[in-house]
Image 1 (tube, rainbow, N blue to C red):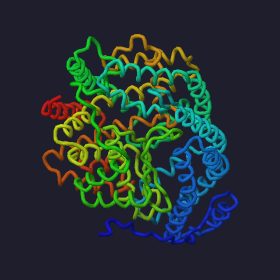
Image 2: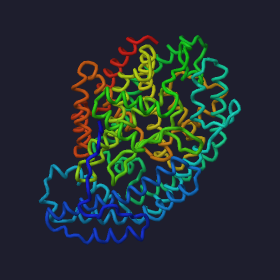
Image 3: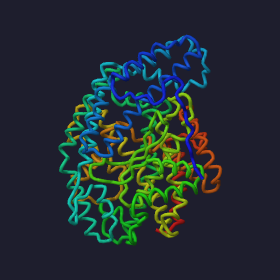
Image 4: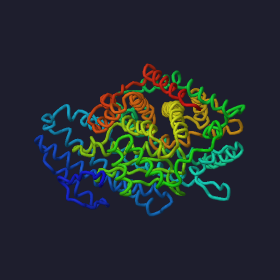
Length: 571
């Protein structure tokens, strides 16, 4: 059987197979675009389609260069090509994008378009025009270069362990070994390597602060916090809601997180829980070994996706066969994992750093959820609606982690599947306080311009005390004080992190429904993905059968449901 074959979407305005890799090739097409008439509703819609096509062709050039750079950060050619796009193309696009917005927003024909259909689109464009300042382009380019430097620093971190040079990601399996002394050695070696770049990373972050503050001031905001909420298009919640989320996590989640850690300490039979005790099996069973290589990871994950929904399995099979995955960890590869979109092809690409861990399975399920989202709305004619709010993008991915966890037979026997599922649910409980910590830390940072590094360190400590568990860092206080250096979002994407917490609440609601109504939950999930970005955030949640809420009234019953599931599965 051929399986999934993506529907072709030929260009309506641009020639097919157009190569636009230099500004000299790109600029004439934008001149042609801006010369198109927009005096009638039909012309205006045709203009938007043409703008989306051109943006997709040019954007795909940048995406491919980003993929190449992150897949091998130590490759000089890939780095140079990516930085060329950042320096020579992106800055020139920004004023043109503003002109495109103006052509749409200022056209009298806009009044003749269906108001409901264009509400979300128009709201975003109005906001972007209000924030746009030509003087900020150079600052944004400066930040992009600093952000690439962070990727390079982290990607270059290796240690020598047991006679072999290893990336820090490749050290993770040693934290699952039963020998506590070996775990301590592996953890301490990685922590020491990170601390070797402590000053460099602090310097880098300090260099990022002033351009960010300057961007906010230039756009007319007194604080970078207020600017960031507008820039991230948080139309449906604000700073007070974020603070309400912090408080709800503190009251409804932290106690359960600390209970889980107390149970781990008791099961391990140790006097105190140390940072190298957090990944090992609490009963000292052999570490879960879900796969031997990334080919096994991909084929077994495809089977899981088929169990969740046959159509999703076919879609992932297409990605696997057509080179839309780069899964293996290696030296020089950027950290983390992501799914990005080849915009002109309307196809997803998954990047991750698999090293043979149970968490790698969840990462691929997560990024697979993003990929299914991309494929679900690829038929949307308006390019902007093939994207959606980040808070709901993460519902797509986190829900797939939870749904996939019910079908782990390709990787594990029943008992080990329960171990993995329990680890997932415990991880959700433990990650929510970390999300609150990271988000609250960013609020502190940007509400305290001119702060010293010592003040920043003290603020981080206080937040770890508020939201953290009962983990003993005696002798490794410096590693705890600088643990925020590991969170790439703080460096690369300021204020992009609470989205994961909001999305987790949506995903937990869909999962909770799936326990008693699998077909209904999966059906609503797929229907919501197909909406893309055509609806406001609360409506997207509602389409998935979830409530958009950041308070204790929602979080407490969800934690109760998780607690019941954990009690059902033996530790």
